[in-house]
Structure formats: structure tokens, C-alpha cells
Length: 245
Image 1: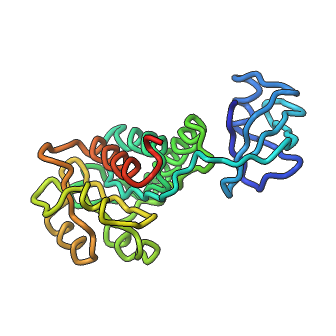
Image 2: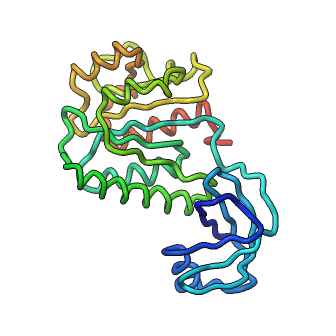
Image 3: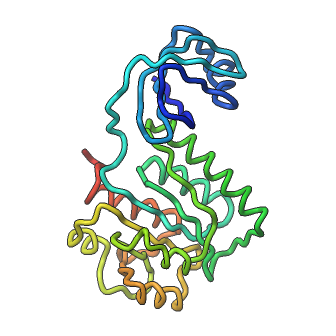
């Protein structure tokens, strides 16, 4: 059954508009009487019946609330250094499929790409759209937030992550592996720091250590940034979340 998101709480009567309405009416060709899944901005889900359909608006009647079990019991924030080309699109899409809670793009010392303010707004809007479509595709009840492009220092100053298990993947010398960092933690929130194609600079590693970030290795092989991000998310989800049941 197809899932769609609305920007309002679930209610007896709901409306889906804009691109989703066009997709439902013109591409999927769903009409009155069809049933769909609907998730609201708070992550609540329900089954709804289409009572009227056209490319401008889809009118829905709520049939029942559903207990949704698609979200992970842990929250993973992916702090991803900007990557060139379509790598960021790929990372965001797959990270959402794996269950991340949110994504924070950061400009780091060795990031190849640099965006001006206008370009950053356009990119974040594109990445949020990718996150929305990925959430729909994989049946999630929440759309992970893609934050504005920021700096590593600003992320480290965010008090919201004070109690989280914060882990930086580093291809240089690291005292412990990611497995150890996961098995000796009971945190329900994880913040994963992933470097760009050129890796984190030594100054960035030092800065993270000063803020209590655990510097870990993923093993003896150097991974591409997109590989490292998805491998780290998978490791955390397998060890602490719901990947694998």
C-alpha cells in the first residue's frame, strides 16, 4: 500500500496537494475508493480512503490509526562532510533507507565542493526532497530532516548532542574500532562524523577530540566517503537498532 506524508496532524478529513496529488492522480491513477497509508508531521500513521481525486488535490477520509513500527528505536544523526558530484544525493537516499534520524551537511577543510549561500539553499531543498522520496519508498513514518549546511565547529557546540555517543570515522591512527565504541555504550542517540573525499584534517580531528568525540577506525581499508557513511550507519543499526530484526 502506498504511503504519503501530510504537513498537518491526522484527522477525519485530509487533503494531499501539489506534487503528491499529481503523482497519485496522474501517475498512479488512484481514484475514489482506493486506500493509502498516510503519515503526519509527528510521525503518526493511519489508513485512509480516497474520496475524491484530481491532479490538484486528493481528498482523504481517515479509516483507522495504525501502530507504526518502521522507525528505529535509536536516533542516528549523520554529520556528513560535503562530497562532490552526486555522492551527497546517494548518501542521503541510502541513509534514509537505513533509518537515520537526521542529516547535517558540513563544510570541512578538505571538502572539494564549496557552495555560496544561494547554492546551499538550493542543495538543501534538493536533499530534503530526496529524503522525502526515500522515506516514502522504504515505508518510513517520518521524513528525516536535512539541516542547513554548517561548520564542524557549530555542530560540536550543539548542546542537543551532549548525551549522545559521538563517533568520528578516521582513516588515520585510531585507538579503537567502531565495534568497541558501540558495545560499551547504552546511548539511544548516535552522532556519526564522516569526512569528505580527502578525509578530516588533523586540526579537525584534534578539535573533535577536545569535544569528547570518539575517534574510531572501520578497519584496515580506506573507504570512500559514501561507503564509510553507509557502513557506519549499518554497523550502528545492527549493533544497537533494528537492522537484522
